[in-house]
Image (cartoon, rainbow, N blue to C red; front, side, top):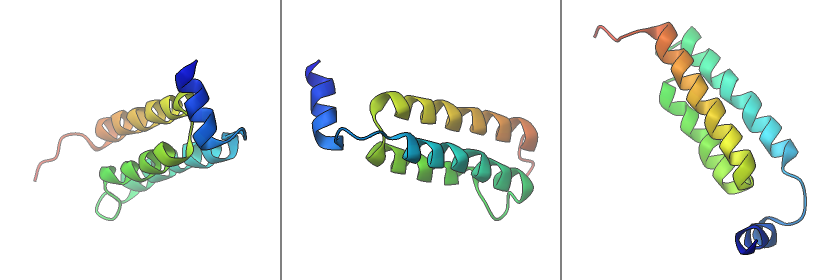
Amino acid sequence: GVRKAGVDYFRGEGSDRLALTALLLGVPAIAGGTIAQPDWCSPSALVLPIVAGGLLLRPASLLALYAAAATALIVESAVLGPYTE
C-alpha cells in the first residue's frame, strides 16, 4: 500500500492510458521498421519506448510495455534470423 501511495503521489491521480496506448503503438512500428529496413532501424531502437514508459507509466502498465517489447524482439529475431556478417 505504501508503494502504491508513493507512485500515485509522484505520478498524480490521472490515468496513463494515453501514454500507454501511444507507447504500445510505437513498439510494433519500430519492430516493423526493423524488419523492413534493418540497416536503418536497429533492434536497439526499442529502448526508446521503454525509457519513455519508465518516466510516464505506472508499474502495472510498464509491465505490459515490457511484454510488448520482448515480444517484438522475439519476432524480429525470428524473422531476421542469424546474422551472417
